Length: 349
Ligand SMILES: Cc1ncc(COP(=O)(O)O)c(C=O)c1O
Image 1 (cartoon, rainbow, N blue to C red):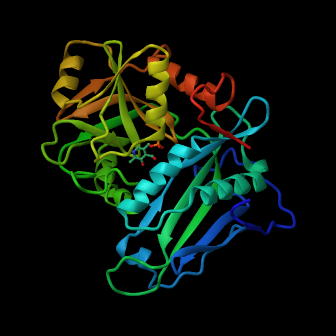
Image 2: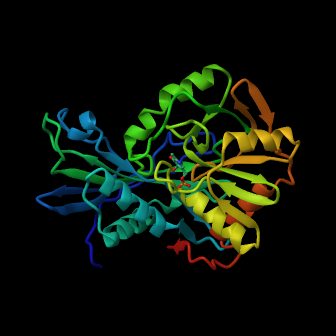
């Protein structure tokens, strides 16, 4: 093994019945942690889950040098555990780290740490439809020092939590045309903490008006769709799967990429391009069947039942024969090993 990871396991612990626990509330028994200083990674270890000791001067607490990933492991139909698209998540982690001036984690260390941690907590991976182990790798600037600077010390950690279905009902969303999530040249394509903190206020305003989420538009003219909350926005209109192209202001979602590949592979018409509000309004007004959904690791496919654009609210198609559910099942089949992994996406323990 290229990277040595010391493993300290709890002498014993029982896995609780996690079914009724809200998403992300209960960590598994162990976590991974490694420290970066003097230009290298040290002290890589798996230990029982515990609080961190961090200086109140830690730069991450003040200047937002934090990056994270969100990925999942599944129990396959034959009982083996599959960590889904580890490579793509690793590549996106590195891109986010570059954008935030943070050191990369060597791929071997990332892979080995995740392999070992999920193996140690394998009993925590729920073996049910719609259930998985949510895996959260993240990095924070841990150097203690007041002063706006790129940190010289970091922690790279992985924690996990059992996850069940994320959203239960189709979403009511509002197209946001006042506030922005990301602008050209900003950090929209990075999975850094600040993007999420900045989104809370407009999302809360939308919730106060009875919506579940906002659909972000471009920061310049607010005339085309970007993404939705913590999901990529996708549509199925006129026998075509549509999604905004990766413009640099939205996240290169792994679920988005997987659904596009599956759809193309199935011979569906797929378009990655600018989707204007005018075009959406025209489709609704013409009485077309419009499917709209969010695509993301946590929810996989989150159907949208209505979209408010300005003062008008449009109804989307969410009946059980909608194409978005078929796409979701096709993705589930790959992850659970029900069909051959022709895309080479599965990392099986
Ligand atoms: C802003 C944002 N967009 C899109 C996504 C969907 O990405 P993925 O499918 O990789 O989870 C996420 C979730 O990670 C997100 O936070």
